[in-house]
Image 1 (cartoon, rainbow, N blue to C red):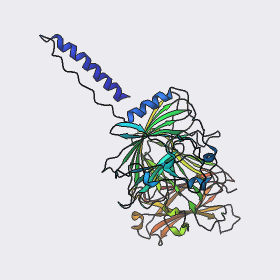
Image 2 (tube, rainbow, N blue to C red; image 1 turned 90 degrees about the vertical axis):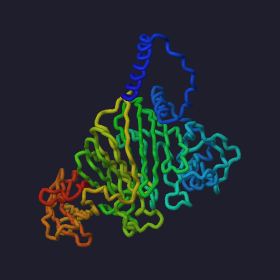
Image 3 (cartoon, helix red, strand yellow; image 1 turned 135 degrees about the vertical axis):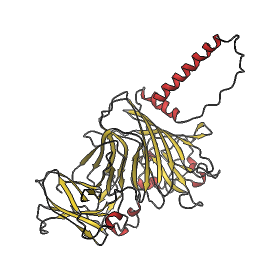
Image 4 (spheres, rainbow, N blue to C red; image 1 turned 90 degrees about the horizontal axis):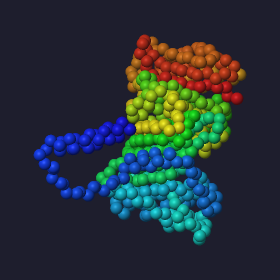
Amino acid sequence: MKFRMLLSLALLVGIWIGPVASFSAPSAPEATPATTPPPKRFNFADVHRRAEMLASQPFQATSNNLPDFLKNLDYDQYRDIRFRADKSLWRAEGLPFEIQFAPLGFLFFEPVVIHIVDEGESRPVEYASDLFDYGKNPVPENLPKDLGFAGFKVLYPLHTDSHYDEVAVFLGASYFRAVGQKQNYGLSVRGLAVDTGLPKPEEFPRFREFWLEKPAKDATELTVYALMDSKSLTGAYRFAIKPGVATQIEVKANLFMRDSVQKLGVAPLTSMFYHGAMNERFFDDFRPQVHDSDGLLMFTGNGEWIWRPLNNPTRLRISAYQDNNPRGFGLLQRDRDFDNYQDLEAHYHSRPSLWVEPQGDWGKGSVQLIEIPSTAERYDNIAAFWTPEKPVEAGQRLEYHYRLSFFLDLPSLTSGGRTLASRVGAGGAGDLQSERRRFVIDFGGENLAKLADDAPVEGVVSGSTGQIQNVVVHKNPQTQGWRLSFELLPHGDTASELRGFLKLGNDVLTETWSYQWTAAK
C-alpha cells in the first residue's frame, strides 16, 4: 500500500509540474502525436485486485453437480483414472515443464478454473473428457462436456534430461506438495489454515482459480498464481517452483479478511505419524517405525534451535512455542535408515523434510504443533503452522512471504549438535510397574565428535511438572556423539513439558530437545 501511495503522489506531482512550467514559457508547447499504450500484461497485481474485490462480496459456495459416477469412486477407482501423457501441456513444444490435469471424483468434488498465461495474455484451459484414460472404470456415455479439473501436476526432468518426473501437485482445497531428487511424496502444505485444533469445525479455504505462466525454453522455475476463497477470507498467491536436489517454492500471499478469525495458521504443514521410537503403547506392526515426519524443528528469532520429536498420542495434544520474528520451522524426517522402517512399498526413509523460511518480519506469535490420536497410517494426524499473536479482524489485510524447501538433508539446519534419536521407557531399575520414565537422547554432529571422551560435558534438563532425576551424560562411541539420559518422576497423570541440551562450560553444544510427556492411558 505504501508503494501504491508513493506512486499516486508521484503522478500527482507530475500533473502539477506541467501547467506551472507552461505559464513561464513564451508559447504553448507543441502537441505530441498520440501513442497507443502497450498491451496490458497479466501479473500478480491482477490476482491481488480480484481477491480484494471478492472479499467485499458475500461468500458463495461452489455448487456440487458432479455425476454419481464420479462422486461414488473409491480410492482405487479414482487412481485408475490417468491423464494421457501424450496430451501433457507444453509437451509438443519441448519446454522444460509439463502440466497434467487431475480429474474430479473421489474426494475432489469442486472444480477449479485453470488459465495459461502466454506472453502476458491469459486464456482458460478447456476441459475435454478424452484427456483422461478411465482404466477399468465403466464410463457413462452422457458425461457433461464441461466437468472441469480438480487440480494439476507439475512435471520436470528432475533426474535425467530424457525423463519428466512429477515434482509438484496442487489438488484439494488449498493443499499442495512437492519433491526433490530421490524423494517420494510425503507431507503436504496448505495455503492457509483457519481454526485448526479448536473445539469447532475447521474452515478449509480453497484455491478456486489458477494461472500458469508458460515457461521459456531455458526456464528452471515455473510461476503459478492462485485465487483463494473461503467464508472468512480471500487471498492472492504467487508460487515460484524451483525443482532440484532440494526443490524450493517461493510463496507470496496477500490476504483479505471478510470476517474475524480466532486462529489463523500461516504456512501450515500436514503430515502423518503412526508410530516410532518414542512409543509408550503397543502397535501390532512388523515395521519398527511408520511416519512421514519424525520431528518439528524450529529456529527462533533469538537464535535458539529447538527439536521436538513427534508422537501419536492417546489424547489430542497441542503445543505452542512463542516467538518473535521466527527464522524458520519445519517438519523433518531425520531418520533415513531403511532398517528402521522395513517398508519396500511406502519408502518412508525417503519421504521429504520440509522447511519454512520466513522472508521479512512476521512479528510476535507462535509455532503451533497439533498431534491427533490416529489408528492407521492413512490418516494425516500432524499439523504445524505459524499463528500471529494479534487477533485477525474483519477488513484486515495481511501479507506473508516465505520459502519452502523439500529435502532429504540440509546440514545447515543445525546448531552444531542435533538430535539423532529419542527414546523412552521404564525408569528406576527397569521395573515395568514403575511410575518413573527414563528418556535417552542421542546428539551428534562434527563439533561433538571432536570432543575428547573425558570432556566435562553437562546436561541441562528441566520439566514443567514432576521431578527430574539421575541426569547422565557420556560419549556414545557408536555414533561418535554424546548421549543424555534422565528420569522423570511424574506428578500423577499431569503432563510435563521437558527440555534438555548439552553444554561445555558456558558454551551450548546442541539444539534444545523439547517434548511434552503425557501418561499413556
